[in-house]
Image (cartoon, rainbow, N blue to C red; front, side, top):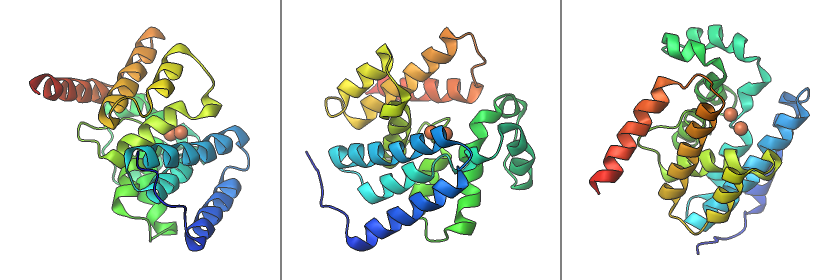
Amino acid sequence: MVRGTPFSPDEEALIASLEADLAVRLAAKPRRLAHSLSVGHEAERLARIYGVDPLKARIAGILHDWEKAVPDAELVPVARELGIELDDDLLAVAPLLHGYVAARTLPERYPELSEDVLRAIERHTVGDSDMSPLDMVLFVADGIEPTRGANEALDAQRALVGELSLEDLWWRAFRDGIAYVVAGGRHLYPGTVAIYNEVSARRAAH
Ligand SMILES: [Fe+2]
Ligand SMILES: [Fe+2]
């Protein structure tokens, strides 16, 4: 297993400053703050297990819910202003917008953020059909970090960390997410169905 080396003092300082910024940003949302910090740790852990850049994973985890400081409904006009294409379906699922918006607002504040970190943040809610290892690490970590609590599906995913390949673990988390939405009788974003069909077809061809 690839565990990697510890962070340098400079890297630790960067992490601490981002965590401090987030604490200000999410001061009114302590549970969201705790979740975000936990995703940072979980993403770093997964990254070290799966040979992904642990610093990028940690940073993506810390910042992924940056725009959760803004109420979902208020993100719709923000997303429009930023030129994010909003079809009716995306409007119907405003809670999914915060990843897309954050990927466009974070560079103003943190111009040093790399493209792959921003892309992982952009994709953490809906996913995509061509997820990178970093994208998958953030997606899975977001779902299984400890403050999410316990249920059968999450505990199964947690037990499979390091057992399944990263792609298989992500695919499991993605499908469990769909099953959760369907079990609750809620709206399933058609973009999610398209990703599901594309990935399942690709996997069946292998
Ligand atoms: Fe999120
Ligand atoms: Fe999250």
